[in-house]
Image (cartoon, rainbow, N blue to C red; front, side, top):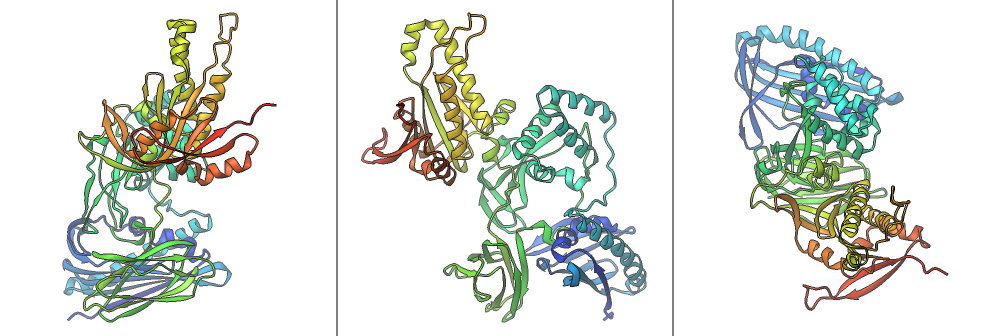
Length: 612
């Protein structure tokens, strides 16, 4: 049997392990930066992937075992080859803190050649060229980490499509004409023109906003306008609830199915608007064609919410030295049902032991300190792949629940609907129903034409107030509207603004600045889970939450606001009411609602203080 060749290289770097980790463990970019060839996935077998690549004209194939890692300290992988000059290949990268906040980075490679060609090629290719490439990349990553960067900047400048510069100039003019901020338009155009293919292939507007230190809604709305203007295309990605990678997708909502399969995790799951469906963008091919290739398909940054992944042999025990932020985490086994939830909190115990038999036993949640040891014991008679992951989903995802509740989206893409008969959960949203008080009397008092004009103006005021708070008008019904918001506080603030403006209207220009009649706006606010459906060729919402919100409006007098208990107890609304005790008085009532016989609902009536 060919003897194993062993290489070990060490760097003393200035940046800390925490700063280096997102760069070094992003094996997809790292392999590209080192000049390694792209790979192709040709099969999945359990947790093992069969991959193929072409190196110097030779086609090689191998089984890649799951990566193992413990952030931000180590990661490694082993490959077993079936075609090519190698038999086995393994790499281990370790990051250890040293004095002065620096890092000792140790990179160890073990290779078993397959035949004479492998024994002749490995010393030159691995010991020479690979060593030189990795040295260059590690030193540049150290520079990036010291600058506070978490993404490599080593990619070559992309090539734009023929005529792209003229199209870019035209797009800029369109976006500025659409009242988008010129400096932000320039930022987005510059990003599309210069970002590497990794970044441009899947643009996440909230991630861009955070990197640019710009409000997220501004960047999302700009990306939507840029799609309409021809700078970007968008796509709905469906994310797996375990690995959280995009496993299905479509350029339109009508192409999505609620039932999805993940080949990596070997699970079927039901998509939901609030977690699993994300809107992402990419350059329009007329501006720039993005050639996205995979250079690695299983490193730690493919699933950054996974803080540790460890293979355990039968009866093996492994102690993981965790360094985690406060929050909720879980331990699960790959392709095995069950989970064990635990919480990281200051003052928690320094260690715990978790015994894994058929799977985590879903025992009562336990607590650990931010720096603790979690001992895993494999009591099963087979190998297990243990996964420790943060339960919180990334808040940088522009979810379908948020996007479809945005007025700019509904105005620009009103034809975006689900496929016929499809229903998707949208999680918890805030719904508002409004109505004009005594609108019939208004028509009698001032006549049909003036009253109709006043009602149309009232719709404009409502739409502007809703959009200013990040919500969207779903539909109008006579002189009433249904609106949706991502948060209850936004709905409350929008309705307060609309009530004030309708009660104290601006003078009418060209009519001797005559004041139009004031209007009283009735509004009910409720939040809860609901379903997204198609209704009259538009995206609508359905469920008990919608029915309750519609009933609350009828209880409003027009000078107050009616909130359900779930909306009133929202932390942001509670804080607002506590801070503005002179602006509103909140009173609880118990009342029946039409359509809910035998039930009594708690509502909260928010009224302005009585005038002296």
